[in-house]
Image 1 (cartoon, rainbow, N blue to C red):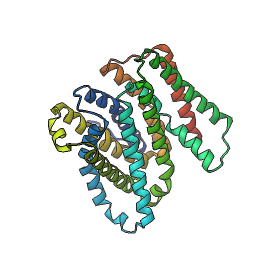
Image 2 (image 1 turned 90 degrees about the vertical axis):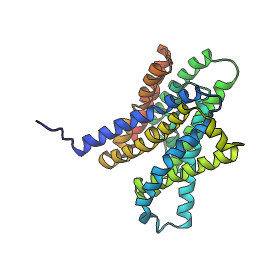
Image 3 (image 1 turned 60 degrees about the vertical axis):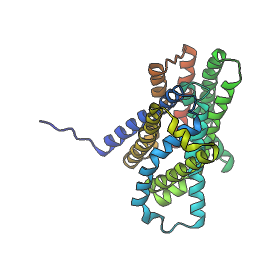
Image 4 (image 1 turned 120 degrees about the vertical axis):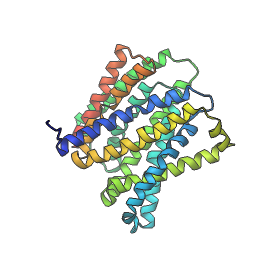
Length: 305
């Protein structure tokens, strides 16, 4: 009987596809958890997510402990800043935004982060952008605006739509800032060692935020419906830990460029899942906007290679 044998590149591509699918379920799980109980908000769900993920990241840190022996005070400061910015603040802002806007729009806005890193790099390093890059940015933001205006026209006129969209855009800015901070640290420590520590720091920051911001944190957690616990743990394990490990394995086998290209299927997957499980619907203009957004971001990603 023939056995299935995958080359390292094929295995890397498979890991990237699986990671993209798991990441794509995040907004679906969050929206479903919000619908279960009025006790659930961004801070509560983030605490469940990061609390369930923390043990796994601490285990990763334990196996990577020798890599941290020569860390300087500046290294620790940068690691703490990166962890809190990229995985705590960016995630919390994203969770806040999903309280007000659809999962489809959330993913499209969040997908703008590569364009933000390019714009920030051009300012910081005084790099001149090409006509192709300007066109890519125009397509990305033009497509996003198309989707936003269509959804806003059907949203309640209470201002919450723009609050939600602003939260998610702020999340994209925070994550883009994180990406600008990390290349040197990833080169120094390796992606596995760096992510293990940065994510552990983010988990601890999230739990501290929860304890300090909720009047009776233990009682609130105990009063949550079991289904909310299930969603929180699922987001922690299947949307945080597992896809992080899969993406790191993909980067080892394919490199960051090809892994990022495969991950670009994420917005389409999120939209399809939102249509199937959240009863969200996009009209033809919104699908056009989504396509323009993805094409623009892909042009940016390809130009980096």
